Image (tube, rainbow, N blue to C red; front, side):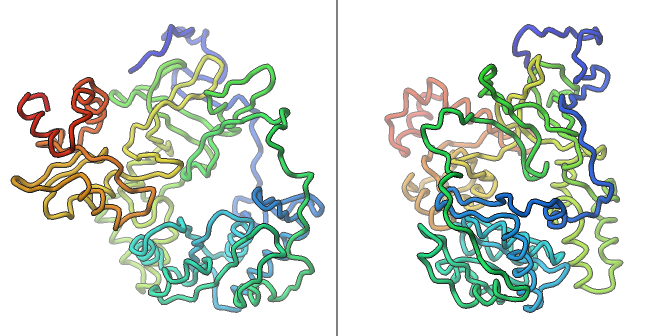
Length: 463
């Protein structure tokens, strides 16, 4: 348990805590008024978006090109996409892959797919061929969207591919591929694909009236967990804001599991209507879980059931370790609330590495590394153990990994060690490696080559 500063709320004195924190349960509640959710919990996102009358209101803006789409334009576009997909055989339960860069087309296609009751799976356009194949097989995709330059990556999947034109400087400066033209021209027809560029919606670089607003969320919380409200009187830029309406949180000591009050740092847990759900048979064993699947009459039915179970796709263990039986999402983030209810995210308790906005699982790179015949063990942050009497260099390792992963997943620096620090259970002790890399010891050896480092370290007995 880490205490950040002298707390204003001593334990055992419940009356001194603010209304948004319960000392008995350790639950933090949103300071915002509770929002009444729709009576019909089965209202899909497309119906919800177009239930309100926003015909003349702007719906989407491409920040790079300035192209915009109003709600009155968006609705027939979505219906056209859905109609075209239906004519191509896409129906409820099918999975459609969207392999596209961020553009104004993305949400239009997504809403069109969802309106049919189909499922969307997305991937980074920079994903490797092996990564695309794996996800496509896991999800059982029936159709894919991508740009012309990425079509080659999808040829081997054996599914129809719809090519989407890339957005250039202006909507009038490109010609669409015939298949996308055919798709969006399906009944019902619509008059204009997008409105003209509207300068009044551009945010100018020197517009001093615009404030930076922080927020926090993850896919498992349906993107939003906190919202920041920064005004001229409060520029709390280091915080990710207050809990969003209807959201609750706990800050838990990751060693003891005890809830912590404000100004104490621990793992952040979240609960709320947007948190990822878990199967009704959550507490059953894997063996019983498999028996439930085998009760289905056909392999197709098994696949359909697996794709529509709550939680992570085909990964019950990951679901169990992330959302507990009481519905609390264990975020893996180390955080704390201050005395005003603002949340501060400090570090990652879990092992995901964030690099330039991308998230990288160390275990993924470790599997790639140990597949090299001269590497017997590896831990990312880039500390690996070579086979004895081999001349494996830092460049060899970097080149070996770069040929198999996306550009943002490449290894940038390699340090060799005689062994990787592990717990009695075999788990890599990453914090020890992190401390080692930032210690004075590495500062002494920073000018050594990757090959010289382990030899010098062994001589000194310090690594």
